[in-house]
Amino acid sequence: MKNKAILICLEKFGVGGVETSVVNQSLAFREKGYDVVILAQEGIYTKKVQDKGITFINCEFDLGNEIDKEKTSKIIEIIQKYNIGQVHIHQYPCLLSALPACLITNTPYVAFVHSRLTDIYDWYKNCFSLYKRLLKVFFDNAYKIVTLNYSSIDLNAKYFNIDKEKYRVLKNSIYLDEYAANTEVTDVKNFIIISRIAEEKLISIQNGINFFIEYANSCENFDGKLAIYGDGSEETINKVKKYIAEHNTNNYNISLAGSTNEVAKEMEKYDAVIGMGRCIIEALATKRLSIITSPNELKFLIDNSNIYSAIEANFASNDLKAQSIKDMVAQLKKLNSKKIKKITDENYKVVSKELNMIKNVYCIENSNTNVNYSKEVLEILDIQLEDIINKKDAIIEEKYHIIEDQEKKITELTNELNSIYNSKRFQRANKIADMFNKFKK
Image 1 (cartoon, rainbow, N blue to C red):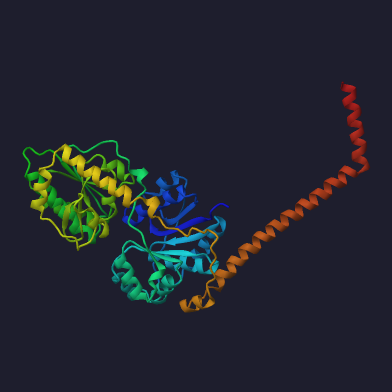
Image 2: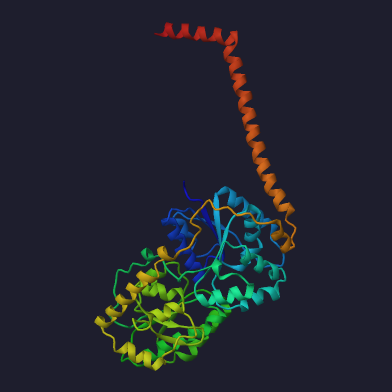
């Protein structure tokens, strides 16, 4: 029996760790034999997944303080149309419509936790009172809660009082086939930063710029470059431009290159990648030198002495011990082509073994899994969904009547044709036509 399809819901499909994770997960699900439907606001990855045979449906998940009944109805129709057997919900704005759709249709869903901080729950609950109930219902009724590390389990389970048996840890991983590099790094001249240009990322971007300038200053007749890839608001982009103008006094080649949905191809043009989270995994997979940073400081160049601690910290934690920029510059300057190859090859082997998405992706394996959410769940939400349920029933009834009308018309047409065929007038006309055909011969 063919697997039922997987519906993935997230807020936007632009640049970001969650978005690239969903791209990689989708490709892995396809390899496992699932049809995949992605529901999100269009972004730079839309065409990429469509070209891979994945269905993309544009949807804007707006924040608010009430259930979005219109979008809930739309998602119910999608679940029915595409034979959805499970829904994966990645971001909390989706709860206002995707969660009720799952509850009404009794479709099992997987809840993803991408942040290690509980502050985000407090923010939603303080800004939108409905989320005081919504988040609890979301995690309580999930088939499985997927996190990237064990500390997230401890925080989430304690915050919502949930049994830890319900959780599953998956390492942040990639679909390796998308990151095969055709070139090797032989020198260290050209650097790339890949990051959302957002307020919370500014310090890490500035640290990357500082490192590049320090490295360039230490080299004679330096002719390398730094490209910063990512999108953001005009305000934050202008802040980065201003920082470059104030600190790049020697006019090194530093540019803002915009966003890209071809991360691997862009990385391959550079020798070293500066970043955190998923972009570092992608750098390791394309055999680039990889310098991990965090929201507050630059950390270190990844090699076999620290790669496992970096994996454990999801390539982003402030807990990782940091090298000074001066020490890192000195370390890079000692590298020759042979040492670079040794580092990048060893890093790739670890990524291939530990962070292969095919091994680390999660879905409900039994696509015919049934759930039966109680009416009390909807009552806990304190929402009026009768019109959504009635609309769903009305759609089914309307389709039934359309089929019924079509069958009736077919029956009437068949009877009419039989009546004509059996009439004496038709039989006489048929005999005349036979005589005419014989005469022609």
